[in-house]
Length: 393
Image (tube, rainbow, N blue to C red; front, side):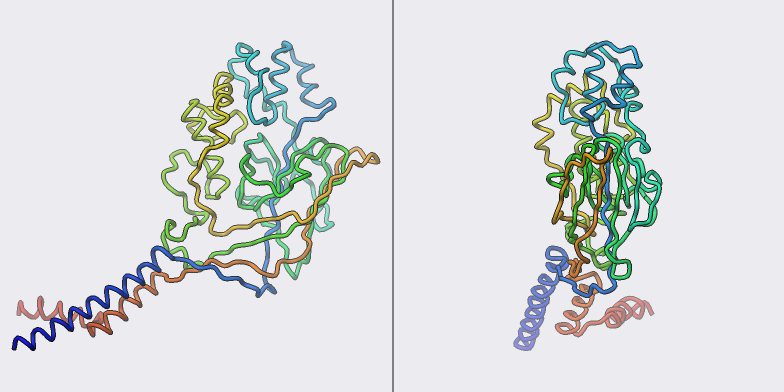
């Protein structure tokens, strides 16, 4: 009798040890090494998003609407120098700001009307040789550079996103700029921010007149819908409809890594200076800086440049690379002409998919329980019935 009990004790102990060992490995795949990456090459039916193109007004060397505005208004010399410095984005407030400490109590309402409207920045535009009114698709968007104009933005809802495919071919964007502009090329789901790495290296600033062209290549990462059942910490990415906590003042309707970086810098400024830069997008609850606040931000330039932001990556990611860019002076015209296109259609992309999703983990648990204990859902229900309901009878 003792040997009999000892035998079953050993069998049961072995089953428990083996099941724990196997389930621990399965749980590790589900929690820690939750996703894997594969390369897809079935490109025949892909529709790849064309990048968003953000154009921001720049400072003209010659006379500009800013100079005309200052001439037609009664400002002192120090006020004029100060306003010319803060109307466009610069890294930090220079020494001229300190000379004008008592010039203005508030200056943002003076600066904003000095910026040029879309019609004064962009002239003619076309998509795949089909002309369109520039300001119908280059929509105004607030950014760290102030008011800019963005084509093909999905983050702010520009409507249908332009794509390229084997059906449409290598569609391209053509535009003309009437004044000096800064250009940012980025993913449609991104926001143009100071911290966003620009695709362009040599031709980020386009003065007038100039011929500009860039040829792009795209690297795309897509995520399998099954990955959404895995926690953001385990999959190491965030979907657009997920807002990581805590983000008390988050002003956007969706998430992107670039928007998170902008929010992080705004919160750092607010924490240390009780305000945010006057060209920042409006974030409800965070006031814009007056001149003293601007000087505070300038004093923190080293810390702001090296700030560490905890911003998860996007689950669906697009990365554009400039394979060729040129920006040459053209004295035969009075405007800058730009062309943005792809060199070839993409033939591969990366897919993020789960190693073990919730259903797979349940299957593993059921398999281990069945192999080592002969258990199933029905047998568990039967045990409950025998020990509870039938005993009461």
